[in-house]
Amino acid sequence: MSRDSALVSADWAEKNLDTPGVVFVEVDEDTTAYDGGHIPGAVKLDWKTDLQDPVRRDFVNQEQFSALLSEKGISNDDVVVLYGGNNNWFAAYAYWYFKLYGHEQVKLIDGGRKKWELDARTYTKDVPSRAKTSYQASAPDLSIRAFRDEVVQAIGVKNLVDVRSPDEFAGRLLAPAHLPQEQSQRGGHIPTAISVPWSKAANEDGTFKSDEELKKIYGDAGLDGSKDTIAYCRIGERSSHTWFVLRELLGQENVKNYDGSWTEYGSLIGVPIALGDEPGKA
Amino acid sequence: MTTPSNIADGCAAPDQSAPLPASVDLEKETVITGIVSNAEGEAVGGAYVRLLDSSGEFTAEVVTSPEGVFRFFAAPGSWTLRALSRAGNGDLAVDATRGVNEVALAVAAA
Image (cartoon, rainbow over all chains, first blue to last red; front, side, top):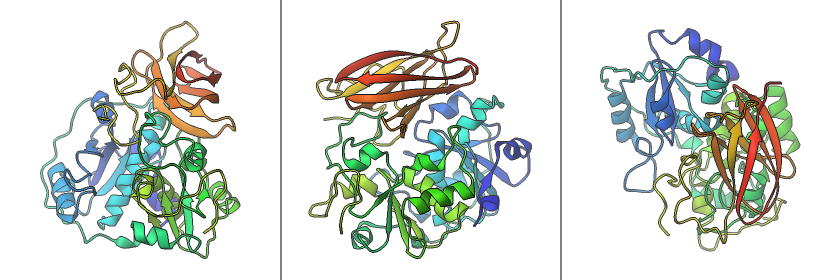
């Protein structure tokens, strides 16, 4: 994987709006953004209602994902081009899903909605109609998904990368600052995790920094290239952004996203937690 | 405590034009809210407002409502607001205390 295969520019996107076999998909939690205007031809995925199981605390399974993409008119051999708000957090999360379920060609628009809007590019309110398909998702590739037991065993052994803001890492805030701080789980971080906020990897306009800048950021933070890596945040979408950077842009192997993240870990009974700005001891 | 429907349990921004949810406890929360306006004093909707901590590190980002309104739930202390928009960019330092902190954030073309 590399920048050339995983990322496209807003310019490329604008030139390929009508290219057969290319499907643009906007992914957001708050889909009123899509309803108010989106890239022409783009279909929408709602992070909550489309991508999360309505009953179990988990995301959609192989059959649900197949049904969803069939309904949206996406084929296995389409090039899926994802973008969204929140600096592409949820689009990166969806990218991780597409990879998990074996989609061959999936790309992210560098900068997402923000770059598109700041560039004053065209939006439409027209919703495309696409003929249904028979999408077949593969069995989940668990080499890119981490679960809680593996995370606990990784303390002091693997790279753990906490990509939340410094105040969330230290335990001073329980959630990002645009949400009420009302969660009941404990604050802090997984001991030995390094703090590299996802935002370090992005420019102000939402585009990714250069490979050279990215390598320096994670190297300076103490990421050991010889070890396996698990990234986490609060609900797994910001860490998808960092997972994308490490695995898809920088080509690092054995990088997993822990989508249970702090909402799960910080509610577990008996696991170790570190407070403050330092990684802490195993 | 029930979660207001416009907040859900994710990280996306709640509707910035909505009044504060009834469940928000202003005895505990530190709310930083305000309006982004341009050089003519007109509200700027669709601006990207980010909250930076005292070291300049990114903490959160929201998009302003059509009325230019943004809102953060932070903690008492020193923060910087930074706005990006088609009408230009702007910065503002804020010393927040518990409760509601109202500010005005101006943007201008460089």
